[in-house]
Length: 191
Ligand SMILES: [Zn+2]
Ligand SMILES: [Zn+2]
Image (cartoon, rainbow, N blue to C red; front, top):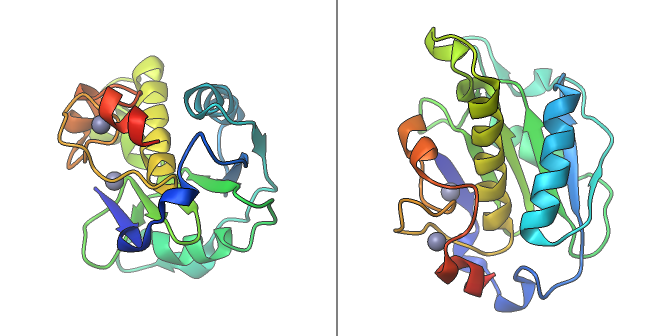
């Protein structure tokens, strides 16, 4: 599940590969460096952008809901908006924390199109979360798909009806596993 804010306000001149700008990856709390390195390389290739690591954000205690034992992703997005960046740059927060928005049990990620920031949660992408044995390759693949999906929103892409396209809406991990980490030809054209 993902939430897109300000999607109706998208403007064509802010789209994708035709615009300048970089991608800034920002770890939120403690995040495995190997995961971040993998994302840096792969997202750069997919969006044809330079990707650099931003200053990590401290563990977001301000966003923690003790009753839900989860972190409010929109509150973290507000902090990510403050990250220093150049014109056209996109910010992607990466959190190894369970994220939620009030209307949903959890979110894999959230994007704020107007401010060109997004966040993904690694928490529910591992096999271990579901009591299964570790599968690091599958985990990395899922992380990349969620990252590309949320970044795609920041470049103005909406949800795609093609179940194999990375912009397809993931209601569950099954949807994430079915789709590829890349854009379908239609979404690629829109980028
Ligand atoms: Zn989405
Ligand atoms: Zn598509």
